[in-house]
Every structure is written in structure tokens, then in C-alpha cells.
Image (cartoon, rainbow, N blue to C red):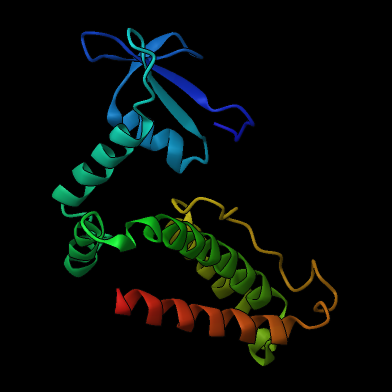
Length: 187
């Protein structure tokens, strides 16, 4: 399932069944979650009223994962989210969360890119290349479900020299990540 510019249109029938308009078959919430993890944008529309139900179904997918023990959101964060609906902070939270996730995606890809181009004195050690391949496979497994992560990093041989400023960029990413952690802990 490749990324496309146009979101995948899912229609919800009166029977609450979800219909994939591209493949002309019915899908489940789990299928929709798979589309999204594969990088696909999804739009869910009620066939009768034309209402956009995307947010409702995305929240339902998150709730199902959380109830199965796949916890991503700590209880204090969920509590703060509930509180934000009854305070003036409600208007700031969506922009903050969107910016935080964007910064996280950018930071992860830059860190992984920089790790692959920083000269490593261990690279001359026998078996280092096999260990690097295993680490890359591990990272691909761990990060594969994160939107925006391509799953590929360049090998040191693929990039002859690091880009200028890569050490500074890495330091900046670390600083931004620490700042984000502070802000999240204050929430």
C-alpha cells in the first residue's frame, strides 16, 4: 500500500459496515489501522448523511489498542487530555500535539540518518557490518509503524562524507527533543 496524494475513501453504510471504495470490499477497524500504519491517509464518510467520521473512527482505533494493553499514552497524559476539553487550553492542545509529533518524526529520521554517516571507529572490527545490519533490522521493526519513517538508512559506504553541520543538527535535534520532553511532562 503505497502513499498516495488522495486519501483512501471508506464509506460507512447504515448497517455500520465499512466499505473500501478502491477495492470494492468491506473492511474492519483493524484493516483501517493497517492502511494508516502503512502511510496511507484515510477518510471515512457516512454514506447517508455525508458526515466525515474519520476522527471518530481514529479515536476508536486508539481506544481499542489501549484497551488491549498496547499502551502508548500514559494515564497522566490521558487525564490531561480530558482536562483540556474543559479548560481554555483546549485551543492550544491540537496544535501542540501536531507540532510535537511532527518534531518527533523529523527528529527520528535525522537521528537515524546522522547515525549512519558519523564515522565509527568500531567499523574496522570484524563482524561490525553484520551487527550494523542487525541493528538496522531491529530499528526497522521498532520504527516501522511510525508514520514518516522510511525504514531505510544510508550505509557509511553510501555516503562518502557527512553533510556539513550534521553534528550541529544532531545537537539541535537532541535539544529539541529534551525541550519536547519538558513540555510533555508539564502537561
